[in-house]
Length: 235
Image 1: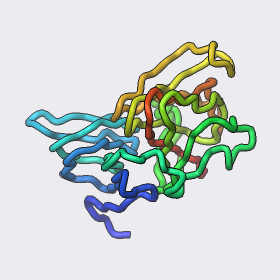
Image 2: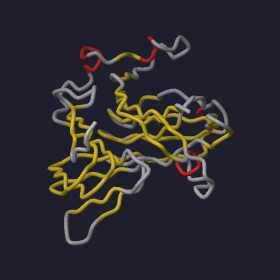
Image 3: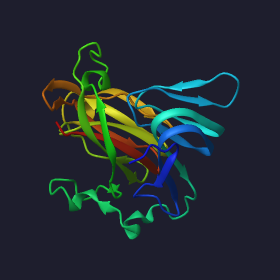
């Protein structure tokens, strides 16, 4: 495919409630209002004044009346309306209990369609902030989806993923939490997730295509939508 600056398309979960775009080869891309997510291992440069801003790899920010000066790949998301936002199940989102039999039957956690946005070559040890000096680049398939839950929802303590992941808050207020064991009272780290924030990776590299996660969960303080960014190993 020929190189094209600001190659833009809607993500699979874009709808009347949420504008969600993928932009590749980003150059001087205007953002009227929205959360922008750097979907690459290289810094994103932003500008709203004479002093440019830097959004590190796999991080995000909220822009208004500004632009992305340069980035390899970015997602731009904005809430268009919130009335009846909780009707996600009526708009094709899936209750997680339909996919995981052990998932608590009374937990209202819904997942959007997933979008495979392309491939990326990166060093897992750099992604996890462990040892970027070690040469360990490999290819990953990059997948995005949204989650929704109402306020005061425990979104399930777990510690297994066959991929690298981080999350970005798009709407509402939530937390990413770590636990000593699979028990709510064993909380030892509580990371607030305001709109536009992406947390640091929780996992550590345990071997070839093996990632160790602590017991963790997302907790929704208010009605919340957050973006999952997943890197699935290809090689």
